[in-house]
Image 1 (cartoon, one colour):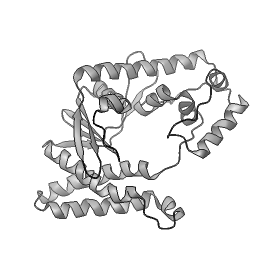
Image 2 (cartoon, one colour):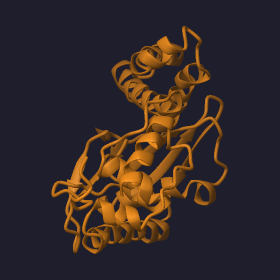
Image 3 (cartoon, one colour):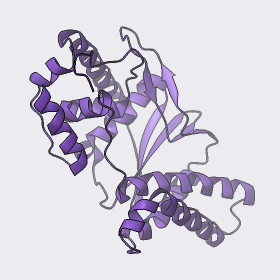
Image 4 (cartoon, rainbow, N blue to C red):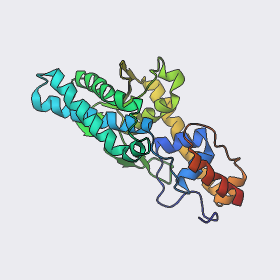
Length: 265
């Protein structure tokens, strides 16, 4: 791919994940958003996506059956989780020659924990995983965000995890900034719902944090746009940013591709 183009395409959309990537590692941001290289699917990534999907189906099961039999609901959610996990991880499971990953054992219980909390909110779900594209003052590029579970006055973002966070405001600021942006853009209350296979809890984000961290994300988007003007093309950007391939978001193939591109800059 040529290195003489601006780092932002005309149809670039800001998002929480892109903003967090830029904060944490501009090298990763460029690899993903200019070169279009994404890390490969892994079991932990699949676990989160599948647990959320199975939980959504579990809520539908409750609505259809009036929550008359929780054991039947649990089995229903477990079956959906197992089936969807096998579909998403077909190639990984084949490569592992039938060895069952620990995430597959956990995904059903995590999904059922999500269902318990979401059902007890006693709110009418108005959208699930619905992409929203909005304009924001003084930003050239629009912002995309995709709330997991949206209600009239609340957005809940689910996080499947193997290690439960006791205080996400100290250890999971990327998550806090993500939902704070959702709150700033939607005007709704926001919360993070964490679950392991053993434990779950929902953390509401206070209004002052939503304002502070949501506006911080807007400033990050402004910085990205300013750097698009400052660095005339990808090659110039790369010359001013040392390649950093540390962290769990990099896999070996992505590192190799990044090394190759940076060597050409």
